[in-house]
Image (cartoon, rainbow, N blue to C red; front, side, top):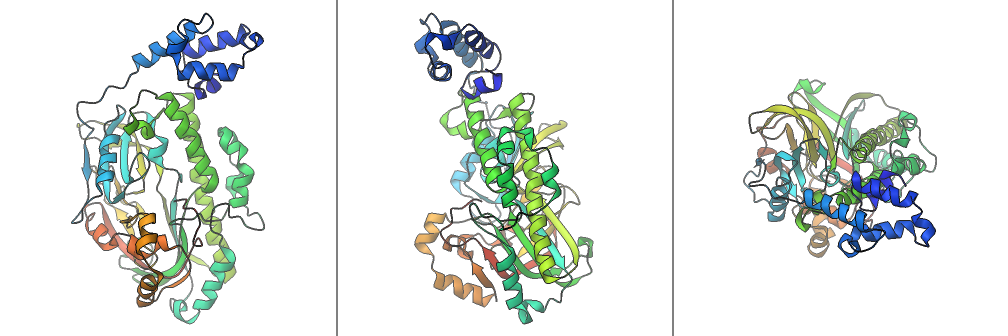
Length: 469
């Protein structure tokens, strides 16, 4: 058996996997034992096999390895700063940020003003680690992404030609779990190396079928007006018709996240329950390198999804593109940073629901289906690890939204802002989000606003779809 297979069973790499391979080579399977089941049982409870003549050496090695790498809490969490503005931060999100900064591999963190509870790292959490990547600090929807395209159409089309715009969104976009186009789309990402991970290799055909589609939850494609206030965005000051989309790496990215999160947990059985979802993969290990390659491929794939969506819409309208702006969140980057301890070195920066905001870097921070979003330019704040919020951020869970919100209230809100909603769930109405302008006010030291996007024709997944955001 290969080392990777043994690690997946919970056997630590090194002397332990070497002993397991010796047992297999010595004919463990010939003794009438299912080798996979036997090794898994030893890995799960090594103390029960210390007197077993076949497995005692392996069991002792596993126990010794785990004792040597037993979790030792830090004296204090790695330093982190919270951008909360004048609103209260969700206590659970604060707890998750503190937990993330208590990991031995953590060196610094930051919590953005749109933060709310997530798996492991909170949404809106930024975490710098030392030579390690944490799958759940990247996120389940790897490389979830924003893309804004300014189209060469009169902005008054949002009123005079709204039915045509709505028809194009309905015809050219696909939403929801398992959504596909009837005809597979083409993009250069299909020529990339999909063998970097067994997950991406197995799911390449599924990824191809879903190319150019959007997920569910908070994913959307919408037309709106872009009001440019600073020409450094790439256009003169004025109003434009724009297309904005938000989605990620679809089902393939979710399976990559799930696979490597489980693997990381098996590699770190020493972590207490409160930290288990923050299990990491060392970038000097085969598993870490494999996840990193898969994550980067999912980044290319997410970008391709948006490229195809925008290409289909522009082609259907027979219109030229005047400007493109886009950015990832839910990703990890190797970056050089000035750290709170005064050192400057390369670290791995996880931005889970956070926008890259290096000096001069353009990004998009959306609101909700009926509140504005903003095109921003990063200020390169060292304290925030050159990051900013990725949206308004939820102030209400989906369960609470379905129990307390109503379509009567939501539709009145939409009418007041002249928004036509083609489809969405009640758990995505504007009332479930924080005030986007309060979020922007809380991060004036992180970004400058260059333009404002106001949604007018919005499409999201149909009500009842399982959220993928």
